[in-house]
Length: 182
View 1 (spheres, rainbow, N blue to C red):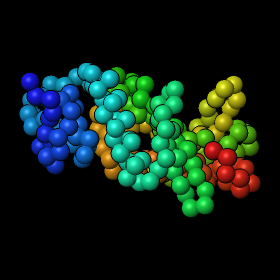
View 2 (view 1 turned 180 degrees about the vertical axis):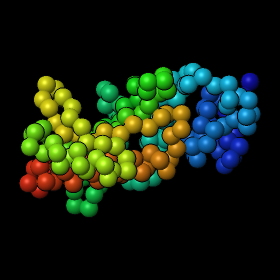
View 3 (view 1 turned 45 degrees about the vertical axis):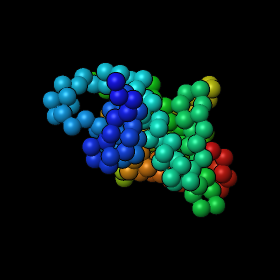
View 4 (view 1 turned 90 degrees about the horizontal axis):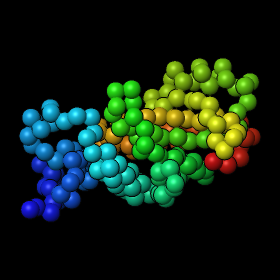
């Protein structure tokens, strides 16, 4: 019984149960029938572990601070002389039952006078959208983005983390009068 799976793309040696290479993010199977017959993430605990490993790798390679939380992983993105935390969770599914990775960054306390401006900004965002979320009984503006876990790869995770952090920090800067809170 093999204790590892060699990635057909980059030849990295992965743990035996790995469906996506930790090194390059590609599928570790060469069999096209195997891919076609997969139900949406039949083993979410494996996908979550693989996705968390990809996320930690992106954080490490990018010089981001990464820490585990009760709900997932928190990544701190440096943005010049500022920083922004992005919270990543692995416990959701889309309407078709596919596992999703959720990225969330707090911008500031909710104030309805900013709704229209943020809704207009949503139309120009590449990753994510502004939303209102209740956290510990209080409403906040957040930037929220989702990514299908089964298609997550290093470049996509890197782009989402940075864009969510950048967008959230811009609004936080305006809402807080320049303070770096979140």
